[in-house]
Image 1 (tube, rainbow, N blue to C red):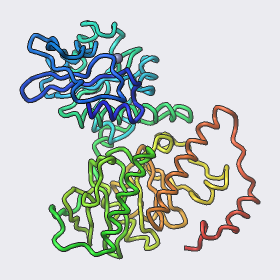
Image 2 (cartoon, rainbow, N blue to C red):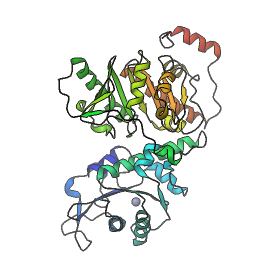
Image 3 (tube, helix red, strand yellow):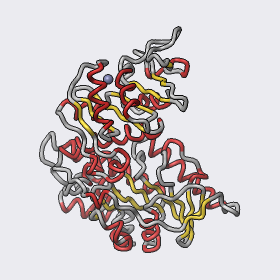
Image 4 (cartoon, helix red, strand yellow):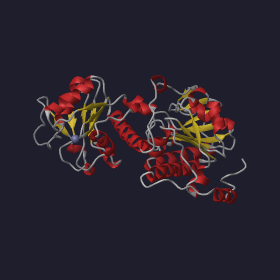
Length: 421
Ligand SMILES: [Zn+2]
C-alpha cells in the first residue's frame, strides 16, 4: 500500500488507476483492491488471494488486473512485487507504439534494463496476461502496454517503485528532449561505466563529529529533502556534497532514497578516505577533484532534473542570455563529454570554477557548483526553470536574446555574480 500511495502522491497515477501486488515469503499473493481511491488506501484494504486464485470471503474485490500479476509470478520466481499504472509520460509512449529508450541514461539503463512493448489486449483479459508474461519470461522487468500503461516488476516493492519512477521520469525527459533535437543513446561500454571508488571505512564515526560538521550534515539533509520535494533531486544518480574544510567534505550515499535521507547517512570523506555507514556515491572522486582544484567552491550538486536532462541528451546548449536571472545566476555554462568524469576527473575539475559554476555532462544531467549549499540549490532551481523556459519557447517562436549592451551592463552592475574569482 505504501508503494501505491507513493505513486499517487508523486502524481504518477490517477485516484482510481493503477494496482500493486506482492508475493510474500510463503508464496501468498496480496493485491490492491479494485476501484479504491488511491489517496485513501489503508493496509486492511489489501486483498489476499487464496491458493485457488480467488479472494477469500469478506474481503474487497481484487483489482481487475489480477490475471497478469499472477501470470508474471508464474514465469519469474525472482519477482516478488508487480506494479502497474497509467502515468502520463509512459501512456504517451504507449499510444505512439514506442517504449522509452533506456540506453540514453546510464543509471536508468542499469536499474530498468531495456523496456519491452506489448500489443494491445483487453484490460483484465487472460490474453493480456499472456502477452505480458511472455515479455517478462524473456527477461524484461519493465513492459509498456500499447494504448494502456506500464507494468514493472522487482525483487522488492522498493526496487519495483524505483524502476517505475525512473522510467516515468525518463519518458518525460525524452518527450522534452524530442522538442529540441534527437537524443543520443550510449553504447554498451558507456552504459557500464563506473566512477572510481575510494577506500571506505564502514561504520559509525569513532569520534563525535565537530559542531561544524554536525551543522553541515543537518543542512545537507535539509537541502536533499527540499530537492526531492521540488522534484530536482530524485534519482539514484543524483549527488549532493558540501565542503567541511580544506581536506574534507560530506557527500550523499550511493543508491540513495531522497525521501528518507538522514544526517547520519551522509558519508564524510577526509584525505581521500570515506567514513560512514553508507557507501559514498561513485561520483566521490570527481567531487574530491573539484574541491581540491577550486578553493572557492564549497558545495556541489550533480542533478538530473527533467528539462536539464533533456538538454544533456543532445548537442543544443542551454543559452543563458535570454533573461537576466539566468544570465546572472548561471553565467556561462560549460559542456563536458560523457567520458570526462570517468577518465579525467581533474580535467572536469578545471572546467568549472566560481566564474563558470555549471557544466552539462553529456547524457548525465548537470554538475552545479557554488560557494555553499544555498548557492548551489538556487542555481539548480534557476537552471531547471531556464531549461524549461527554453524548451517551452520553441512552441511559440524563435527566442530573442537580450542585446550585448544590456548583457555588459548587467554584468557590471552585478559584479558579485561575475566576480573576479
Ligand atoms: Zn491498467
